[in-house]
Length: 446
Image (cartoon, rainbow, N blue to C red):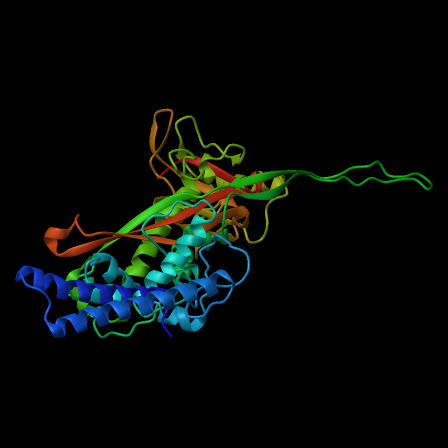
């Protein structure tokens, strides 16, 4: 059963064939032959037939039916990039075919081959657009992003070099979904951050700012009235972008693996950017506000000009969060590789057995994670190249994702090298649900 996009492509092909017949006669300065007249008329009839079928399908779509369009679902427009694809539809969707169509807009066969993908992307863009979202290129439906495909991770993919994409040709390797790759690559997710997917519009998350109180009472007396106090944590979409260059030969020769390579690589680069925003985003210039830039979290200072972190400082981070009743067993320490190395060589207080503060990816009995997205170029007084160390309940860090993934093609930037650049953009934001859940050192020397 043909989709509306496939019907339109077939109708356009009929018109193009009719125009080709007419143009050939014009170029030869003659009228159509009898055979050409018949062919010309047949192509116009064929085109009108497709137009009638499209009109019927669109009428059924408006009335709530899905007919030849498997993408329309009954119910309210959600604006979340989900378009109601079935498992069969999702398995049918090929990002490679879509990329080829985007890279070759005048190639009739490429457009026809990707008719389903173009239709699905148009529906996803409509869902986002109906909520006021900014449309950029085509929008990959959310359902496609959450399924796994075959492949592995690389960047700047080239058939000629095995380690840069050549190994994808006729190779069957396992890969997880785009969303899962994002999760796995983000250190804040490893630390336990909460991800909200498929959001639409601005989001307000309730936050308790004051607790109700309990009181002892004597017989016959009522307790004093008290109630919790609440405010809201606001989140709105902010755009992060990444790109990957794919060679022409790789796109032509590779099997499904190239789709996974590109998808995985884009996810990895996006994850690093999202991670950095959640940790140290400025809150301005289109960036989310990260943990270290959020006023009101706990703080432990080492010195006027910074200094080496010691066991006392590490425990003090836990104490600051604990004094606010915000420490939980799943809390974690998060810092960069330089501080990890430093803490491995720094003994615990009173240790005589040579054991370092950081061992077996644990610090002070909590999980310890290292990511170079945690800054190591901070300054304080005369101190430079200082690092941050964060402790907290990362479940109170909310990562929000809006809509599907927007995909743009840039055939010009790397055209001289025979590659095509694909740019992916994702709307994301982050926020702290509870400020007291976090404390940070921002002046540790390596």
